[in-house]
Image 1: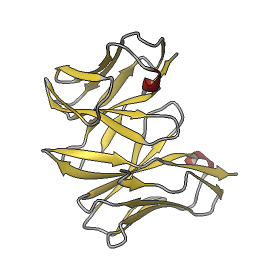
Image 2 (image 1 turned 60 degrees about the vertical axis):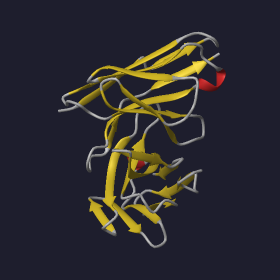
Image 3 (image 1 turned 90 degrees about the vertical axis):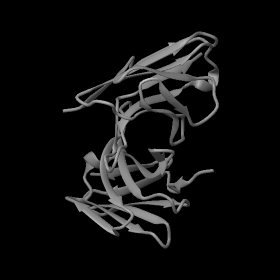
Length: 114
Length: 112
């Protein structure tokens, strides 16, 4: 049962344009959402997060939007740069038996073309 | 500042051999610790988590086990590896309150 879904396995964007990565979830118990960036042969690094009580969080070129009614979140990168090329994982967190359980999506590989 | 170390970075093991992957965290005390696996073409699957010394919870039944002998040490083991154990294993700490998980650089395990 895939509770966090990233339906686009890959995305190509021209440098300078906007990259939009999408994520859907099914469990309404998730209360915190995160995006991670991963380069090959490295662990994921935390990028940006949003609480379920908000609908937008911005950090420099990165903005995460949350639509709770649609159970959908998206990551916007503006402007996209070649160094943004990586795999992006969406993650969702909820309390589970006294600890924070984090569930990841399958990832979207972003390629920013110079 | 907090750092997390995983080793080895790559490992090739024959089917039926034992496994021991180690993870240590520095700069924090009593962290929540996690083992994740990324299989080819798949997302990050939670294998084990620990909220304290000797406390291990398993998320999925499998051929692997985990132990936490010290506060900042987390070990992933297997007595006999299967081909299906191949993957990218990641240790992480954090997840308390509103802190995100922080990952190590992972171990690429290939079972032949």
